[in-house]
Length: 259
Image (cartoon, rainbow, N blue to C red):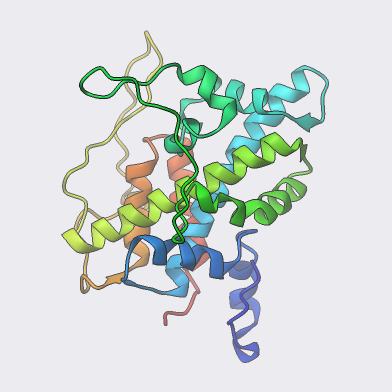
């Protein structure tokens, strides 16, 4: 990641790996937080959020690449994304994008509200304040950079979907982190564990280092790194993707400075 606001005297061995954690610009990540909360957001929080988003998108790209390889293709298409989700439910993130993207509209079917009335397709908002969907194009450059780093290429429609998933997921992550900060911790959400039919449930995770704290410290006007970790446990079901996302976010911010 290129941190435009970082001072040259702060660059060094401790910050080099942090700055390369994500293809998304720090300014864009912080802009997402500004869209959903007036709370203060430090650099370490933005790095952690960018790291989690990068981990999720990398997993999606890897799954899509495996599908494409089975058909002897190198360029990814939206169908590869759909097949990857079918094979790994952990990749089913950014659900609001599914109802906006042409890729998923035909798969999700007709949507009904609580009273049984058909919900029409969402229309593009004319609001000056960008939403996660309308502002999704902000992440196109980062998505293309991430694809290149993974040695992958994709058709424009696939880039669009990855772009939208990044925007919606990061927006939901920021919103949940702000909620955790306001409410003083995660106190309304349980744990969902993925279990294959016919297989016994895995034992619970006892490694406290892999879990986000349920009770936070600090004031309720500032989003902290642990709030991002807690939001990650809300957005991602309990599985290898969540554990990796938490681990990488911690590693990224280990030597980051606070502001």
